Image 1 (cartoon, rainbow, N blue to C red):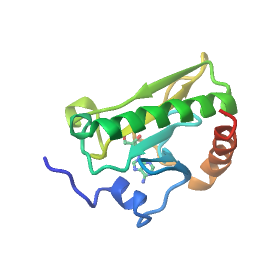
Image 2: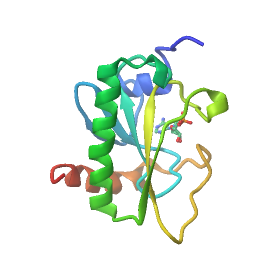
Image 3: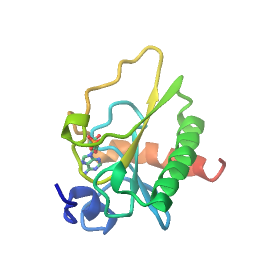
Image 4: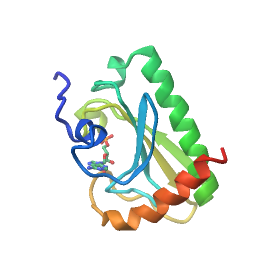
Length: 141
Ligand code: AMP
């Protein structure tokens, strides 16, 4: 499969579709997952037109992991979870549902089970306060 420039994440990065945005820089774009598997589930998108991890340039791959680390630190500071899961899926068989490279930042708690992947959509308004807390913490990490 070749990269589809009209996939939903490409549209979000171009400002053609809505999202609850947290942060963006030259190489990456960060937003709240609209079907969160846990409170604070955040996505780091590359700005490169790359379908899977194999397609990323070394520079884009480096930028993704640097932003993922920084946002994970901010999510930890803002929400103080017991643990943090970082995930990245490739191909439908690998669990990928949006074919534009992105990293999942998933805060985990000892006593709450993670919800199923890409299943239950929430009202974006409920994600705004979380995005604000993470954004504020980004300035301090
Ligand atoms: P993956 O299965 O790794 O490709 O993950 C795609 C993720 O994107 C899932 O966790 C979905 O809940 C999430 N998602 C899909 N569409 C949107 C959207 N419009 N805004 C924010 N998150 C989305």
